[in-house]
Length: 309
Image (cartoon, rainbow, N blue to C red; front, top):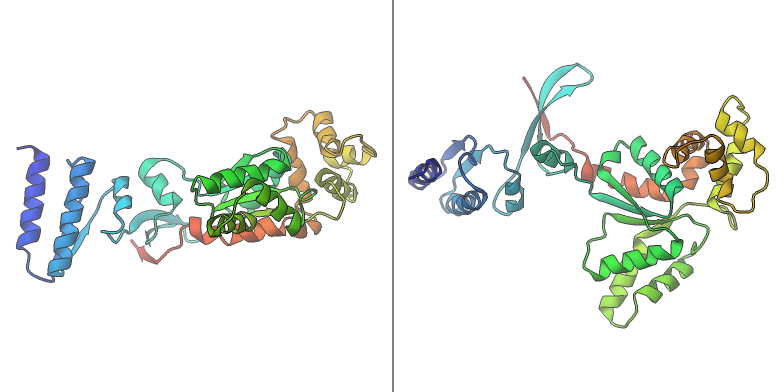
């Protein structure tokens, strides 16, 4: 008989012989057990605990048990340094959030997905997420042309994807009215019946945009904000002031990046860092900012209680 089998028999014997309302503590229940055996054991223990009103508390670092939340009341225990008092404290969390998964597996879960048009939009989303301290939970993807936004969300919804934590973000210069968005959605999600109508409504709820002045391109608007700043000690602002007319609106920003020889992934970030200090910033990004704020509590751990060592 293997050590794992011996452990299972010992645990079951203890649990099945326990009096009603007993408290049983088990350290490292997963030790020496493979996943299937452990999952079957948990189900048997759960059934017995309900029948005899037992309280069984065990420790584990096996992440697969998270999938058995119907049988378990899971708590995550972690030691952290209190930044104020510089002392170590023990925190107890009752939800399995990305940080809990990372502690168990080393893998960073990114539960929030945002789809955007280009690198400039990526830089804006990264800035907002960073300010909210949730950047590590956000995955940003580019869909390219604005029309691809509707194709992308239609495909995901038809395939059965849960899009509640997915946002599809337009620059705001095209398809910027509710009527235009609904028209594009109906082109991609065609058909009749309640199911199609529900998908169309869901798609509409998951699409939003930057708040641009009418008939203005995003790059043109951001350039306009830059040249309102008189701090010519900033090389970015100095170059922005030298750009007066362009044959393509994208060049209002791309010319700054090219002239300063920034990498295309770095340049937009440096420009957005400056623009985000302006009063107009809050209104420009208000839709995405509000959407992300509502999801902070979903991805960041909040303490249930603190136990001081």
